Length: 338
Image (cartoon, rainbow, N blue to C red; front, top):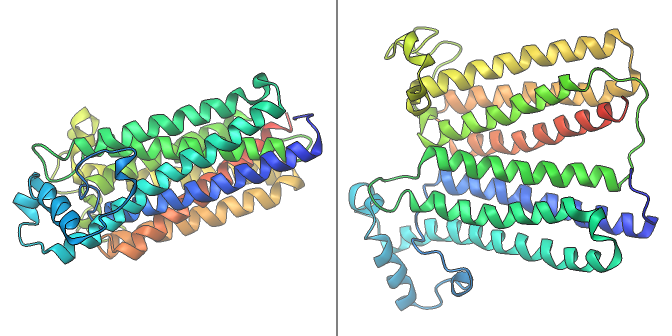
């Protein structure tokens, strides 16, 4: 628990929760950018000159002509008009603008607190800032994968981009809880259990990014079976144990489905351990966690049934933010009990 004065603690916690909200919005906008196939609409990475959007018709034509040079336009969107291009452009521009905003909103207060506190007390916040900067590089690294010989970005790079976003969000929320000095609960379950649970949630997010990146949610739009069978009939079970499975849309969807079931079962174990041990101060946290897991599974099922409909898929991603946050909170207060 941090022992700096209450005023500084309050300032730190307010700043961090604001950053948490902005980054959550960024993740949602990023998801919508992906769902609307807007991520390749801006083909250059210009940190400063790219801050302003096109201000006149000539600027729009310039950006559109750059887009016409990449495979996505030539092979997929060759009939796109300038007006249609503007729609996908704005999604990507807002996404990049939020990235710049997050960098500034984190750096300026970080400098302020560096004068108020010993650097050793906020080294973890400097690490978060490093991750934010690194995330900008990974974002361009991801986009660049779709500019040469393919009509979309690499799903591996997409998943890395999303994973780092959730790591940043998680670290910010963890530090918020620390600076808020949440009271510890006495006598929790073994802290390795909620840690494993949180790890499974993050792995599921990575697999979910694979599903999104390969449009795997648009196939096998049935549940609980994949078509007429439990295992996709366009594959062999042996392929599931090969590295190439992570690049196979049907197998990735199969993994995503079944990992969700596994997480649900693991939660039931946690639920019974908490209630069997009568750790009453963990009841509320574990109940909220259960509600969010059920909600996420329901949204996941509807995402599949509706062929990754944009609004349902977006809600599925929003729900994942709440689920990760709830998992971190449960891990934090339980860790504080041991």
